[in-house]
Length: 159
Ligand code: THU
Image (tube, rainbow, N blue to C red):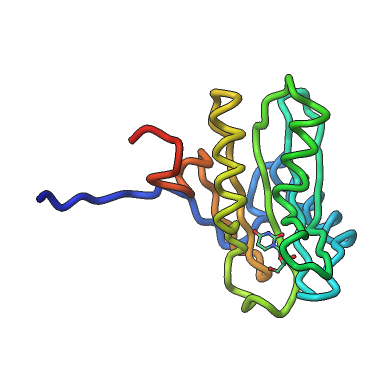
């Protein structure tokens, strides 16, 4: 038996307004698309904005359904749209934000397990890591340089 340790690398900012210009724009786009969330059941509105290597930004919001598991998270709405419509583009950055009482204001919107798996596979498909920007409702921001940081020991990924 050997004890092992996994380290997750990320940067923390007190507020997303401290980020660079293109990242600030991405956060703003993520907040903008939050407004299209269809979340009558959770009342929790999530927005995801994806920056592509061609400079375009693709956005998505969570879409719920009365048959609960049929709904989809904002991250997957955006990333699957990218897969369908921009199969040859590389994802450079994804930013995820949320509005609602489900989380305390200082709690980072941290993607669910299913979204992490999809975020990771996007990275594997394009063979290039991309940045993940997670924001809390009070503005605190974490930046990860790869989706892999968020899913150590992932299914389907060699250790
Ligand atoms: N949700 C997302 O859109 N992304 C996440 O990473 C976590 C949760 C959505 C799913 C559901 O519509 C609502 O937030 C409450 O869980």
